[in-house]
Length: 499
Image (spheres, rainbow, N blue to C red):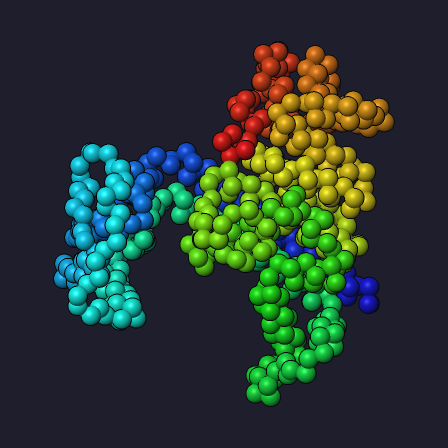
């Protein structure tokens, strides 16, 4: 009976982990697709915002001193962007306040509609005379300006217009729509893996309720878990346990990634840094997300302390298409690995399910979508968990194929594949070996034999990524006249500019 109960609990826990991993991979695919879309349509995305383009081309080259002097003129022009979208009296009020606050320095006329080139003139960079009148306090000026901005922004229905307007008028900063999209993709990607890690921690506590008490004893706290009123609100002990698990997991997420590392090693024996494609780069993604959320990308002392980056505090960081693509790879590798290794360690009777599912997810979610950069590290890291040789061989082949795709040639894998003995394996593996080596002369008859035997089915013949190069060969149709083929571009990532 006890064994049956354990099996049922393992079924439930692993089912939840499997489902969460699939959702995570689907989310990462969506983020990659959005990143590729932004790259393909960047010109049209940026073309929608004349204010952004003007600041990039004509204002950003100016010195900070001259920017301040031309701001009244720029403000009047920028405010015209929102006229017609909000009540005119609100725009006029904000314009007046900005004029007053900028007007403490001598104004330089600056017409944004002209085509003349912008160059700094040292003659303009002289200290402004102190105003004769007594100025308002900084707090009063800030409060007045904030209230006026709130009146304008609250009337804007278009959130893009609101964001562009705020940044452009108050900071004179070029706002890239594609750049804003990519920073939001980084935020979403980190959120996705946080949700996944929270699920893993939750399922751990469901398997090991005793760990809830162990944490309290270890930390030596005497804090009450629940008040008497809270306890009365729960219908049974399980509801109280569920609530306690939720509190513990929420507290863990608030601690940050260093504590996550300690928690996983202490409770599951899984070392997150060892599972990563590049742990330092993974940490940097988390830290950059923090900058995007809290400082609009400006580097903080915490970022410098954690990452050791050799840049100045206050520098503004962004995320281009390559950065987003790399971040998705880094987080995908960690996400898949932590689920696989945690599940295999906590539920040894599910090790076969774990490796089979990872193999299937890598194929369907990554390989078929040409997300090759994380295929090899995931496959390589999962091989050690395999209990069945069939799965081990599949992961081995896909690991080689991932390296081949990333390198763009077979030199990276040639010697290893050539030494792979497939004589005792099914014809399918001889096909795989020849395909990895691009030995098309020997591959085509071997593939025909495997298809005739049923070792390779018609769908695989058309879509199996391993056969991409041979499908592009002119002689492929001679052997398989009825087989459809995919484009030759399938052997590469979706967009080479993301590599």
